[in-house]
Length: 382
Image 1: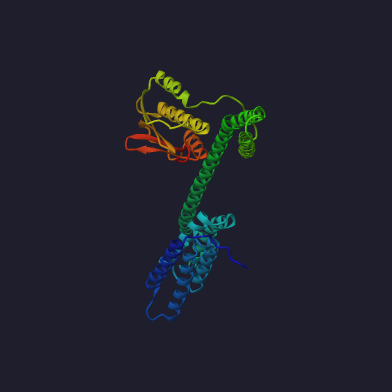
Image 2 (image 1 turned 90 degrees about the vertical axis):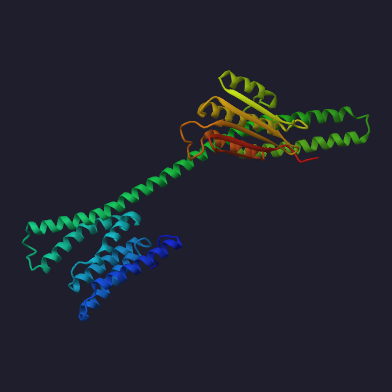
């Protein structure tokens, strides 16, 4: 039969083994009785069993609980009084509740009650009292032992509940972020369809018409137009395949471009924002439509976030155009409320758009400002 061990990091295993060794050594020194061979033999057995239970408490809580019971029976068999070595019992009860399986969890609870009864009876016998004639002293010992055991087990149960609540919250947060990302992919797929698929369909129609109209022109023109048509058809097929992977339905509608950014600025200024815009140089050629759409949506979301969460109404926007890329920076003053540790819907959506356009995006506090930086490729240098 194979013993199932809990996965522990190497340093955790080393710490447990070293702690168990030190615990065993200290306990043996305290339990040692010079000149008492039989008593010392019992001390060695009891200390070894409790130390083993201490060592296995996180690696295998069920085995640790069993070893603790065997150690307790051995302690009573050698007629030894309770001592410092019994501290291991409380540690084992804690880990049984905190890390054990469901069966070990309830076995630990049962051990608190049964253990309290057995310890009470053993102490009564050691004191020469009649176990079957309970007194207030007997009840007091049982209550004290039971309370101590229950505190150890209950602390582990609270730790178990807290850990599972944190795990559930993390799983829920991951599921929510995955849902947000999926919804954003659906919206981006619609945008890509409008910008890319529609444009390619127009290119195909124009290329086919030009090829037939150029029948009397040199053959090179016909070949070139044929190549345009073939390439566009292949690209359209690839785009449709990508769209099928990203979404299940399509929606049509005009999409914004860089020409619409001034209208966006006007809307933001009308809302009371003091907007400062800077454009470093200008693009050598018109950027791809997908890049224009991504820039517009990222800028739109960044301005919306600044309007909602900024400390004041001042926002700085900077476009830096290079031969192979464009850099967009949106900066606003942080509000009094500290930013959340997990990204919101808007940040996730902006990052998705930047990544699908082949670029990168960061959104984070810098000093007293919140800064969104996006870098999108616009083609290789000539």
